Amino acid sequence: MSRKHISITSSAVNGAVDSIVTALQDIRTSLDDLDAEIDRLDEAWSGEAKEAYRYAQRAWMADFRDLHGIANQVIAAASTASSEFSRVESANAGVWR
Image (tube, rainbow, N blue to C red; front, side, top):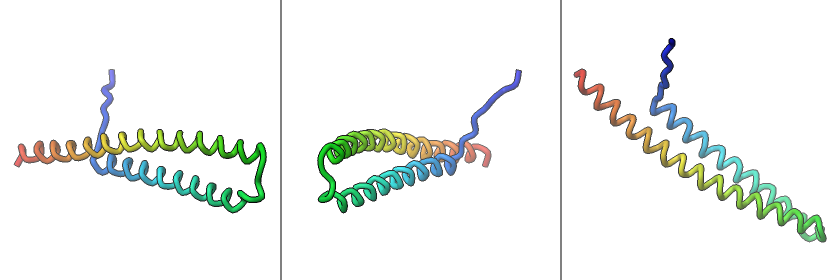
């Protein structure tokens, strides 16, 4: 039977955190760009299409807020884990000095 193990480094965890932060910023920028484009068209746009867009916009913004909240929890947990991992790694290295 082969043994499996997981290898974790604080730099890998920090890289993952940075990737999550960047992805959230990219999503927010895309949503802001879309809203800006729609705002430019707002006066020429009316009726059911306008209402359907506004309904969809509210839904995806609510979803984004949920995603952002969950991502912030993941970021906080990963940052704590990275700090703790570094602390334990330093303590373990100190045993051999």
